[in-house]
Image (cartoon, rainbow, N blue to C red; front, side, top):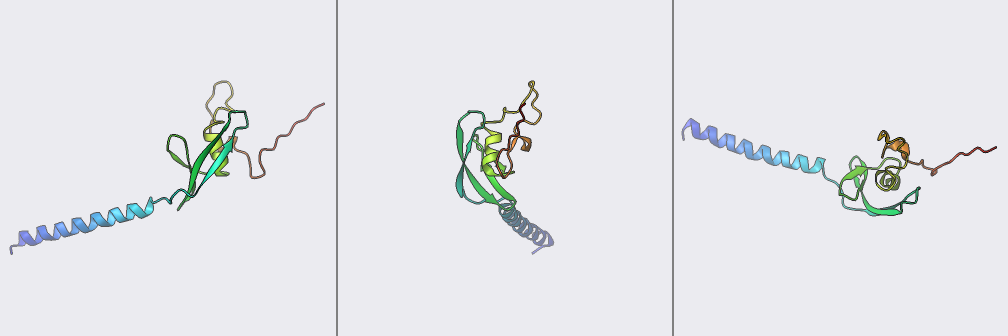
Length: 119
């Protein structure tokens, strides 16, 4: 065999080996687990409730929004679902979208605590 044939054979072997390694690496890094359960979020403003699946990933739990996007859970999966869907416009003042659907609108571990003072 000539030198060119050895070079081509070596390049083809390298290309096939590297492509399978890249595919295997991408599959394990981005792999997400199956749906492990469902969470229910109830609106604080009378907008109803919503039920969605959640799953565990290598980087934390995720909940699926109605249009199919998976987002990471923040305080809890039900709070993230509530703030991202049914109560997304709850704390928007004067038409400003700053803070809509963010962790600022989520309740803590002990639930939503409301402090009221009256005279």
